[in-house]
Image (tube, rainbow, N blue to C red; front, side, top):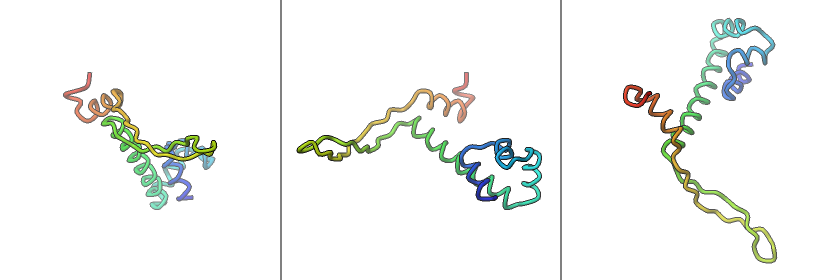
Length: 110
C-alpha cells in the first residue's frame, strides 16, 4: 500500500484522489498518515519527487535550452535511416513570468 501511495503521489494525485483510489474517506487517509509513519513518508516522497520534476521542467522552460532529437529520414533505396539533430528550445514568456512572480514577487508581481 505504501508503494502504491507513493506512485499515486508521484502522478500528482491529491490526498482526496488517493482516498478515492483506496475507496476510503479523505479523513481516513489523514488518519493513516498519523498512524503509519511509513505511509506518510511514502506520500511525502512521491509528492516531493513530482514537485521537483515539475520545478525542473519549469526552470528549463523559463531559461530555454538545447536538446538533441532523433529523426527518421528516407535513405538509400527508401530504407529509413536515423539521424540526430540539435533543437533550440526558446525560453517561454509564461514560464519566465510565473517564475519571477513567485521567486521575486516584490519586483515582478502585478
